[in-house]
Length: 323
Image (tube, rainbow, N blue to C red):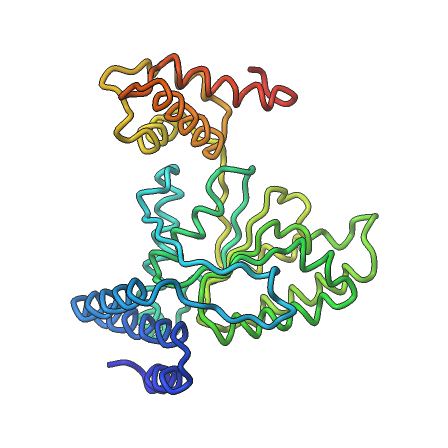
């Protein structure tokens, strides 16, 4: 059965007419039941909530006035199949999901599930998509924190805003993505650092370490070398992303082209043309190739058409890559 705290939170959310908190509490109960071996009941609860969300539309998230624009809310619907990553990385993402779903089983043995995860890698390699998939798989809303706005807009008040953010993380369970994390997680010893930013980083370290919420905290960075070393030990897991290898590139092209994928395709040429491109760049090239096929009244994408689009993406980065 659900814990007393979960039932009280569910009832309180109902009488406060807080739909999103009600849904979150109900999903926590579903996770508890799944961890207790009541998989069918957990599945039924999730189906009821999903139907309610579809009937009502996307939940309206209410933020304090001074936090609007700094926190972006969404309810992703990306399945795990949307991720095209190496098997080892997919296994580690699955472990986060499994531990969250069975967190009460872990707690019964004095163990805690992974709740704080650092994603490291070049732009466009799947970090943000991973956060969306995790939110969908855990049936939680995704809140993206615009870290650059937090720092530049509220300079001098950033520690207070961080406290407000972590109060929200505590009160409203969800997946919280700190994008461009290095904007406030920079190394304290950097010569161009200022006293204010050191205070911001110290506050951030304290908030992350002390957080004991039901939320999943994800930080993403393109520049791990800029992060303060003390930050790494505050996270339960660190996942490293890279540009896709040939098997991932082929699978990504198949996923994006879908019905536009021809029976015969020049894979050797396309895998060569796509080498060095990120997931996002290959996705863009595939969609451009689909547009080319549609405007030409073609039923399928051609090898030549996609090759041209991939080469365009290579040329867009000719300053750092050979086309």
